[in-house]
Image 1 (tube, rainbow, N blue to C red):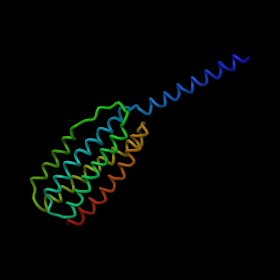
Image 2 (image 1 turned 180 degrees about the vertical axis):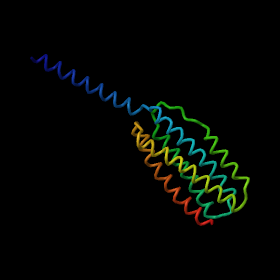
Image 3 (image 1 turned 30 degrees about the vertical axis):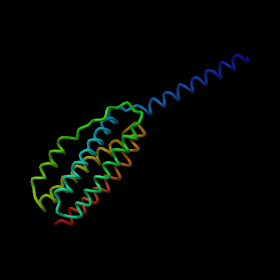
Length: 173
């Protein structure tokens, strides 16, 4: 009877260890949709770094220049936060931005003064709407808790930027 109790306790401890190891492996796992979100978020942050520099350099509207400075700092913070969230996960981080968004931002630089400001704001509104949808999708269906947590935080920043962009767009008319 004593041996059976010892064997039972041993089996329970082994099962508990296996469960803990499985939980740990799941926490370090990124499924395809989590991975796609991570890559989209990193690309968006890279695009925001470029766009914020372009906007600050070309805008003649001081509130837009101030917003570009904020957007630049937020993109750096968001990238650092995401990379921290990914610590220990098996993922290769991309180095290039989404070429479509990059080309769109670059085309706007051909405009001048008010035309640039209005077009730049509209492009950024569109890009932020796209990232809001991608972030909300991750929140709704993501599996990795760290990535979903980042998406929640990131979504608040995107929505704050959208409010400011809407305000800038309306004040330019």
